[in-house]
Amino acid sequence: MGVAARRSLFWGVLLLTLAVGLVFAFRPQPVPVDFALVERGPLIVTVSEEGETRVRDVFVLSAPIAGRARRIEAEVGDPVAAGRTVVAEIEPIDPAFLDVRSEAQAQAAVRTAEAARDLARAELDRAQADLVFAEAEVKRARRLIRDDTISQRRLDEDERAYKTAKANLATAQAALDMRGAELERARAELLSPLAARGMKPSCPCVPVTAPVDGRVLQVIHESEAVVSAGQPLIEIGDPEDLEIVADLLSTEAVRVEPGQRVMIEEWGGGAVLNGRVERVEPYGFTKVSALGIEEQRVNVIIDFTDPPAQWRRLGHGYRVEARIVLWENEDVLKVPLSALFRDAGDWTIFVEREGRAEKRRVEPGRHNGLESEILEGLAVGERIVLYPSDRVVAGVRLTARD
Image 1 (cartoon, helix red, strand yellow):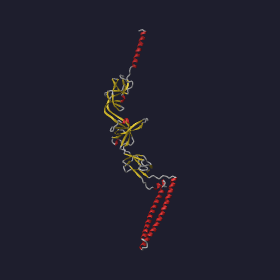
Image 2 (image 1 turned 90 degrees about the vertical axis):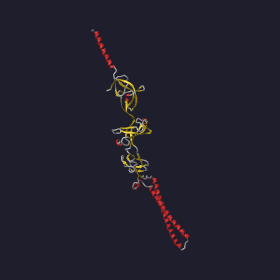
Image 3 (image 1 turned 90 degrees about the horizontal axis):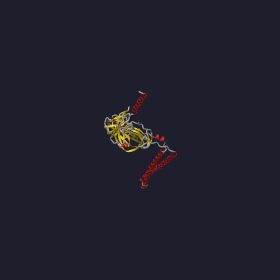
Image 4 (image 1 turned 180 degrees about the vertical axis):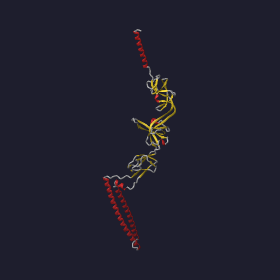
């Protein structure tokens, strides 16, 4: 073989090797994907929201009158009995301090009352003297009438004078008592708070008793202080009569109905508690979310269906997670929701068929955010692609991701 032939053979083998290498380098590679199997099983559609436990009937005890509320000795959690347990006592308020002008006016009123009392006492002395004289006159007239020394008219006049003097004495005595009371009232205006407190014997207190059996939930006004009528003092309720209030978005609340089952989670215990929707309040309110967005919220009230022994550790104002069951079925054809995507307005899934991707139209049903019900288009046991990327197209080879 000549030199030219050997050179041609060498370059031919080299080009053939390069061509084979390029074919292997640029041949289509299988796309690694995550697979899941189409299966039948239970599907639960829920709406979840944070909730808060609360005593169903909370009684706020307020001050019935204005006065000084004594220190409340009851502690949170103490048991109370209806009509027997005194939870608070209110005593009269001490008099206020007088400014200089008010004190001068009060002292002048005392002196005026003292002068009026002295005048009334003098009037009483005169009335007593008149009565003594009238009594002596009527006795003398009664003796003289027996001897016909005086006329009957004179006796009648002396009798009238005696009765008039007696009535004047009673009037003077009543006027003296009235002036004495006025003097006491004027002196009372000068009482200081310290003197008034020392004059009080035992506490003429107004007791505030518990209206129902239960426990103390909150002591609103613990220390001794002056309170006004109607000011809250203490809260009482029955911790074993709990309910849950969860504020849902109004768009979710319209799907909730009384009687729906509720799963209560994230309450601190290991087991999931069961509940039931009691009512959906008809009144919505505006609430600002953590992102600063105004949302319309509606309160949903939930009752426990489990016995109290299972949730006894919960109390008033505890946080829970409430999952309200909107729909559930124990046997549906379902797939992970991450396998579904839109293609030309239709719901589509990539199905593995003989190692290659097959695009298939499906009809989904209800979903819960993780799984979706499939009404048409799939069969049990088929492998589907999860999280399909733009590399997954119809006919491409697939391989399971490591």
